[in-house]
Length: 150
Image (cartoon, rainbow, N blue to C red; front, side, top):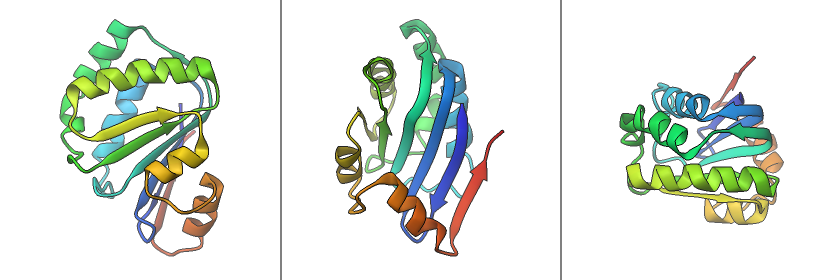
């Protein structure tokens, strides 16, 4: 489930933090609601921090149908947009790679999945050593937007 969205305008990055269990339809809803937020910017790289995700309950057909239902949300990203999903275990990595392949067939933006925090940050063009360092830096600035979820 989505725990938090942080949009750091001064840093030009968005971080979506996931935890607990997630289904493909919940993931599709997350993408749709995120891309239609008034403060969404396709020019900001997006980090999906899924290291606290414990289960992604889905099958290929469910992922495909769920993401097909929100295909227009993918159009909100431009071809230079970058989305990186950071996970902490092999099982979630495998499920997110499957979802990533479905997104690849429906989108024109850059996206990837990794287990490596340093790789995720470098791929997004960040110089901070950790995701937490981005949060600390971003929260000290006045132009950050944080949306907490229940």
